[in-house]
Image 1: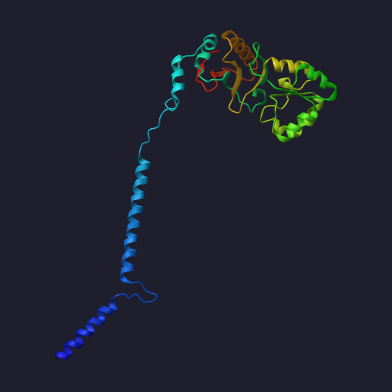
Image 2 (image 1 turned 30 degrees about the vertical axis):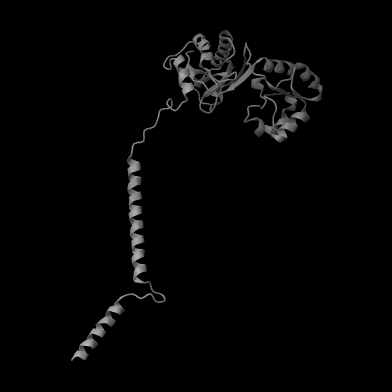
Length: 293
């Protein structure tokens, strides 16, 4: 009888051993299986936590600072000199504009206007040039693209760069050393291939701006005296330089009156009602002043 009992016990032990996975070839041990399950559970908990965090971030209300709060301290100090809700007259704005510039260089004063026009309409694509009575305050570099017969005339008139060869050489490289390009009508056909270089920079000569003319002397003298060209952009806005901060108030006012008069005279006949929606006077890197026209 005892021998039978021992045989039964040994058979039970064999069954227990066979039920446990063995670390043989092609199989994983119980320890490895347990570790793998633990890693899997850890990854699932991590993924669930990330999902909860993303939902909370999405629902959270982010408090953003206003545009004025994001400005520099120096800019905010300049605003103490003006009333941002008030519309100033031209005379008041010209007297105040030099006080809202803190840059170390002689900043440019600009007039920004919002026009109620549709530039896609031919008669509403506002474009013109105006001679500033007090000058622009900018040292303008003038190039004259003229034939051999007009080279001496252009040089005497004060052009900085004269002749076809020298100008074409700069156009080929793309390194332009001039701010205004004046051409005679006979030479315009030679500039057509450089339209992609001149057009985006606003340097392409145009009869409306007076830069395509046979009277080269007059065009050069006007450009030197402070003639500025303006053109409405796709949004109906004008950005026109008025002068420099170093100008006296009466000089700024004279230039401003000349520009406003020119813009108002170009009001399209097809446009009824208001023409100028808003206008602001500002300096380089400075706050703007609302003005009433």
